[in-house]
Amino acid sequence: MSRILLTGCAGFIGSHILERLLADGHTVVGVDNFDPFYSRALKNANLEKSLAHPNFELLEADLAEPETYTKLKFLAEGLFDQSSVITHHSSSVKDAPLFDAIIHLAAKAGVRPSIEDPVGYQRANVIATQNLLEFAKENDIKQFVFASSSSVYGENPNVPWSETHNVSGPISPYASTKVSCELLGHVYSHLYGIRVLGLRFFTVYGPRQRPDLAINKFVRLIEAGEPIPVFGDGSTRRDYTFIADIVEGILGSLHYQGSNYEVINLGNDQTVTLSEMIATIEEVVGKKAIINRLPQQPGDVPQTWADVSKAEELFDYQPTTSFKVGVKDFYNWWKSQSL
Image (cartoon, rainbow, N blue to C red; front, top):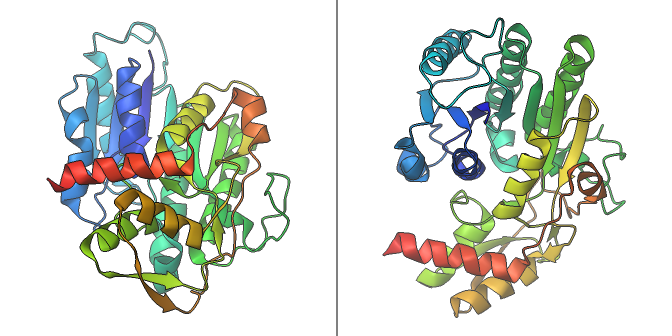
C-alpha cells in the first residue's frame, strides 16, 4: 500500500485512476480545481463513488497558486498521522516522504481552446507543473508520473510516432506546454534524482469522456438527430485509446523502478479515420449522422499513431480494447447516465 498524490482527480482519466488506486489499497490525496471548462456536476458525478472511501481525501485548489502546497502538506501530514492503513511509513519513521508518488493529470486540455487562451494554458499547465516538481523536491518524493500528450509530435509525417522522434515543432499552445513540462521533468530528474515519467496519451475515450470531445459529442448529436460538425474531409486519423488501457499504462509507470527519466507513448498502436469513427458510432447508435462539413481547424494534426513498443518493454503495456468495443462501452455508459 502506498500514499499517492493524484492531481486532476475529478476529471475523465483522473477519476478512473482514482477508483483503481483505492481498489488496489492505496491511500490517495486528490487535488482538483474544478475548472469550469465543463460542468462541475459531471466532475462531481465522476467522484461520487470515491468520496465515501475512507482512504481518499479531496483538496479543491489551484496548483498554480503557491499557497496550495502549504494546504496540501498540512492535509497530508494530518491524514497520514491518523491513517490506520499505512504501516510502512508510520510517524515513527524518520524523514518519511509525504507521498510515495505523484500522479499529475491536472491540466487545461484541448488544442483549439489553447489558441484562444495561450496565457491561461501556460499558467495551468507549465507553472502548475513547475510548482508540483518543487513540491516533490522539497518533500523528497521520488516518483513523479505526469500526463503529456501525443500533440507534442506536431505534424511529423513519420508514423508510427516513436519517443525517439524530434518534438521541437509543436503547432498549438497546448502542445507547447506539454513539451515544456517534459523538459522541466528532465531538469528535476537530473538535478534532484526524482524519477520522472512523462506519459504521452493518444486520444483517450470511454465512459466519462469530456463532453467536448468528438466521440461524446457525436454520440449525443447523432442520437438526437442533430448535425455533427466535421472538420475537413474525414481523412484525418487518430490513435484512439480506451480508458481501461490507459489506466493499466499509468499503473505500470507508477510501479516502474528503472531509469530516472522517460517519455513514454500510451496509445493503441492503431489508427481510425474520422469517417471510420463516425461510421462506427452510427452502427453502435443505430442512426445515420447528419454531417455539417467545416474547414480544417488550425492546430489540428492530420494523424496520430503511437509506437507503444517502449511501454511494452518497460512495464508490459498491452492495449487490448478494439475501437468498436470501446465505443459500445462508452455508448452503454452514456445511455445509463441519460436515464
